[in-house]
Image 1 (cartoon, chains in turn green, brown):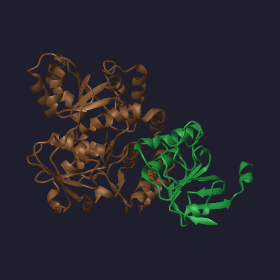
Image 2 (image 1 turned 180 degrees about the horizontal axis):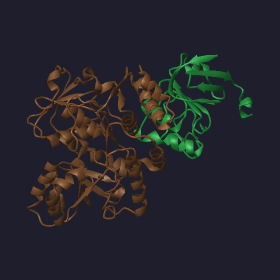
Image 3 (image 1 turned 90 degrees about the vertical axis):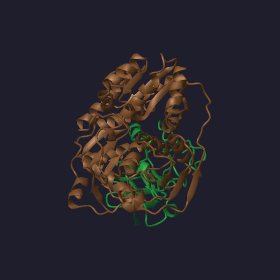
Image 4 (image 1 turned 135 degrees about the horizontal axis):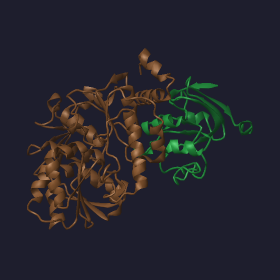
Length: 141
Length: 375
């Protein structure tokens, strides 16, 4: 099933979802070297966002954070794509310069249809997301 | 957001720099609910100090492959381009900083290296701009009556290359309406008033002072307001160009005190945040005439432009043992990191020195700062 959304950073990616219900800052909440979330108050603390489709409500915090996503991308620790409920400028611009597809304002509440481990395709050229469900085995292949 | 056919083409451009810049403007326009892009007269880019943008920022700038389409000025760098050695900076840093500037020069930006671009090219009333550097944004909106949102370094750069900005926020007259009246009682330091109020108010304030403020004081007020809060514009009754265009808001705050306590003994006195105007340098020269040599280090920061116009006066100040640096400031240069405690006459520097340079800071008026340095 394809769910429409608003294109913020163009591109296409497919991968496994990691879902957090907390606002996120790429400056401080994540270890840039590993992609592991270090914010202790996060519901995904200790888990990695590297190479995943990262689903979270929106960004928070400092404007100094714009280049952090680019640094993570270079180190191979960035998420493959981002789905936000409602994005904000720091994450939007960071995703665009790091060439990470970002989509927000899905027609359906993403927390109702996506859970960590689901395989997802994000098409931020045509503006939709497709959820294939919990089929991790196929993704690794 | 509606895009013209030409703008659609830029979004699909074969040149990745153009496509990315357009993508940034469209994304921001969507996020802020803009209806379209509008042409701008100038752009001012922040994020110039290598210390602040690092290797990733430098690499991104080096990969840019386009020219700016409007006059584009640059914020201060991390060092005086000629006297970085006297600031105690090493050659490795200097080399990286020069690389940043070369990358920006090659896209056609003017190496103004100042947070006060309005002293070099003053915008006109009503001009649409895409400026980063919060203190310059406040000054342009409030004192000049030009129109700009608070851009980030990257969005201002994108606007410079495309020549446009999304139309939302302060580009629209109705959004420039004051939300709260601030009555300032007594002769308080405007920079301290801004510092104290920044995080207390939402929306645009309209101030009523007991006396007329100078342009330099308006600059200080705005810079401080923007450093402790999200303010991008203010009005002043009987002074700023747009205050009469709106009704005075009913919500009211009274301010009769604006002080902070000292908690360290300064080993550096640093003036010039935002960069000193010609008038401020003349005023400092007058004050220090009565003194001998300073007992503490005194560093002044201004733009190359203002410096070159005051050559003789600056030689006199240097003769007294005061250092006058260009192209940089105490907030963006790592040079201030080796001090314990810096005394400033700026609420903005008081906010950012501990945050960005990890040094303590104390506040005083220009007179108090100089007295502390010389007596």
